[in-house]
Amino acid sequence: MSLYHETAALLSGPSSHQGGSVRSRVFGNKELKSPPAQVYALALESCKWSPVLKEVIEAAQLLQEERKLTPALAVLLVHDHLVARGGIALPQTHGLRAAVERHKARLASELTRARIRRRCATLEDLRALVEADARAAAGGPAHPRWIRVNALKSSVDEQLATTFAGFRVVATVQDVIICGGRRRRCTEAYKSGKIILQDKASCFPACLLDPRVEEDGDVGGFGKKRKIYAFEKDRNRAKTLDKMVKQAGSERVTVISHGQDFMKVDPAAAAYKKVGALLLDPSCSGSGIVGRDDLMEFCMPEDPFGGAGGGAGAKKGGGEKKGGKKEAVTSKGGKNDRKRKRGEEEESKEKPVMVDDDGATTVLSSEKDLTARIEALASFQLSLLLHAFSFPAAKKITYSTCSVHAGENEHVVVKALASEIAKKRGWRILAREKQVTGMREWPVRGLVEDCEGDKEVAEGCIRTYRDDGRGVMGFFVAGFVRSGEEDGVVGGEDDGGPFVRDADGIIVRDENGIPTLKATGKKAVEEEEEEEEEEEEEETANGQGNDDEGPYIRDANGLIVRDANGMPTLKKRKTNNATDEDDDAWGGFDD
Ligand SMILES: C[S@@+](CC[C@H](N)C(=O)[O-])C[C@H]1O[C@@H](n2cnc3c(N)ncnc32)[C@H](O)[C@@H]1O
Image (cartoon, rainbow, N blue to C red; front, top):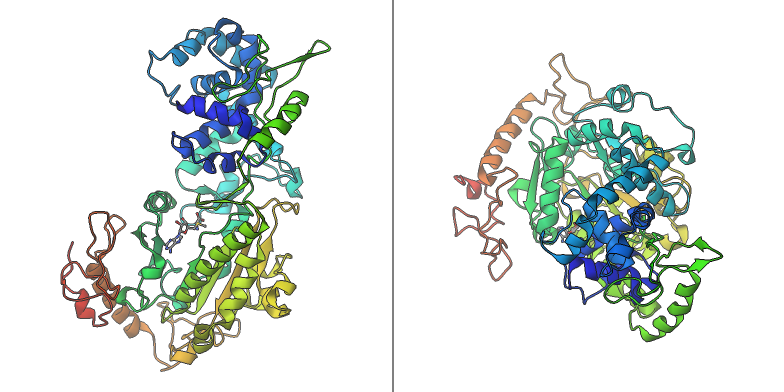
């Protein structure tokens, strides 16, 4: 079955009445032959455009002319023909493609009419309006598109004076409206990496981590010689990460380990000996994600023959006339639909499906299934967090999820704090009063009852809810800190780090910008130079760069080859395994 038939069946056939988001219907359907991501993209975009396309198809009388097209198929094909950049994804000679392209002049002029009726000057303006309508249809309080200004390439002032010149400041999230006409400038700023589209809540972890080069060393810092090490187990996602890092202009300081399981990263490896801050944003249930498609309706054109309403797999129930007024046929809601729904629900064996934020699906037959899935995720999340706790120089960690379940949030935090390693290494919650201003002031905090009544822990946790009027997705973040004295690391969050500071906590520097070490009272210059040399050695040793596959030998599938003890082998010196602390073990690695 083609992509178009499968998507039509999904949007208008029996499964369309099961409720749930388009996402869960697509990713939960194990019978799909077409790639789920393609089906999802086509379904989602077509749903967004379907109110416009319904008008276009009806006015162009496409269904009267092309009897092989069903209303659902017509929407999908006309969507790709008129608005998708690549056109219809079928050979030119394919019957379905020809059935639409035969009418291209009429379809184009009806699209122009639909655009003018909506007072949009260009197709780009119409796109912006369709997006805005889709967001509004997602229901609940306004959910604006958040834009983060990339401080590596621009500044808020510059963006306000350029990309957003002419925008006005509004007092509340609900006052935010979409200004379609400004889209072009936004696109330019986006393409150049000056702005990044990112939900406000998902910026919280980096903000809470607040890495300082002098105190926190690697991972978070981006000073001259500091590094950010990023681990992404999924190779496709790692490619996206790579792209985003380059677009953000951070490639010089970011080392991405493509396909690397963080659990298998050796915290004692020389490369990570200065890692002071870790941002842990692991896979989760994704229950806080604003499902733009949760309430999305698929509007189908009137079926002129009153028959089948949706291509292969679709049942009867096309448009119906009531008192001469046409009704939109949607995948939910209509009276006919409701009648059908009862019978089909009984027939169908499909169950609700939970789709994690990385696409894993779990069929939920009962409440128990949900509990079991959350427990499984929580156990994996806790393992990752405890692994992060073991990095020798780490003094700050943030843990975040886009889940609203306490099981993945407060419970993980509480268990992590009670762990052996937390006690041994002195990890504690980053208390609210020690957090950076914006995070400290955020009003929504963790749930005390889910922190075993510990108010300090609950206050240290930051939550957001997608329906609380703040315009953000559901999110959770907590920070952990330690002084480092427990295992002999000098300096720490309590004593303000290794350098002498003034009464305002600012590091005191000489005229050359060199800080003074508390421990010795001497300028830190020698140590810094020494560190730089070491880092240069490490970089050579690691063959760092975004495109290489790291220092270890990999198999044909790109997986790191390990010995019986799980130790990887360095590429140059096959006899040394990666736990060798001697820097020499890294020497001479040149590819
Ligand atoms: C919530 S997403 C991260 C999203 C990312 N921080 C962002 O803002 O776009 C979680 C990611 O962790 C990755 N992941 C899960 N387990 C992992 C592991 N053991 N090691 C490395 N990456 C892992 C998943 O592939 C997924 O891409």
